[in-house]
Image 1 (tube, rainbow, N blue to C red):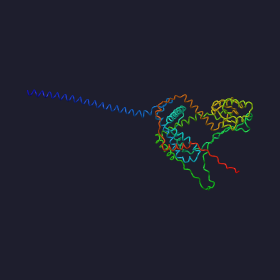
Image 2: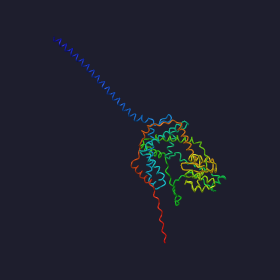
Image 3: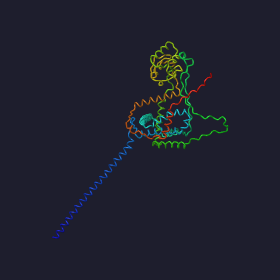
Image 4: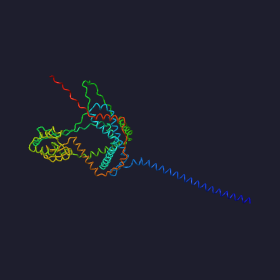
Length: 459
């Protein structure tokens, strides 16, 4: 009996031991599953967070804000260029502030830089961030199209050309400062026909003066300087000095906008593509142009214009009628004479009428935004262009080409750009306040000088 009891106890113990092992294995299995699930959850959470970070940084920067044909303009490229523009404005304002004492002593410089300074300040204003962003994006779209068209024409810009352009932009010329090419201004001498001489005074003076550049101020030589005294020798601008100056600019741009030297080189490369394409497109612009020489009388209403025209047809003196009726202060003192002009220089209705008239013919009343005009043409000629006129024709030819290229291109602008316009960098509050105070003073009307009191005559 005792032996059977011991056997039953051993069997029960064995069964308990197997159950414990089974339960233990099940618990361990559950633990492993829980641990695996926890690891999977952590990995999934990390993936979600990583995707969010990736989406907010790398992928977001690669999203398009515009597309020109098949080429995308990314958020990153757009933001870099906006920050560059803002940084450039800040650096210009800082330079202005550094030279403030000199500018305050020169009213002409101050009157020139005042509007420029205001424009830079306005561009940096927070309320104008969207306006600046749109301006930059439009410029980037145009720049992308220009590079595409230039490359289609076989135009290339090498790294060496970029480096040379940067050196010249900083005033460094390794092969010596180039001698400026003096291009004589072509100012044709008019030959007057008997018809023209009958229409104008014996000494006609058609308006034909090109813009005159203000000469730089040169130091006046001292008459008493001894002959043996050598003039000071300027310190040569070395490659080392250029690199130092360029690096200082890069450091400042890096500090303000996060751009580096390679970014600046790519901006310069784009400018060189535009310059080279400009030269190709404008190479065939003619150096002569059909022009007319005309004069006019400007009045306020059609009834007066008809009255003046009839008096002219009846033989009244042109100059006398200009003196009596014309509302154009710019030409009234010279008999309404507008001088020679080509197409594109006058508003369209006026231009169309002038080019359609024969010499001596008096127009019907022509209405423009300024009033009503009576026009008389004094000359028609194919005339050589002055240098500044030729440059204007080049600009017009290139702009016409660019407008046509834009109309033929597929340019898409996405609203995403409105959400990613940078508002940094900004001007320091201290400098902004200083410059704004100066602008406020500059914009105030200047007091008119009072007349000197006249002495009272003695009785």
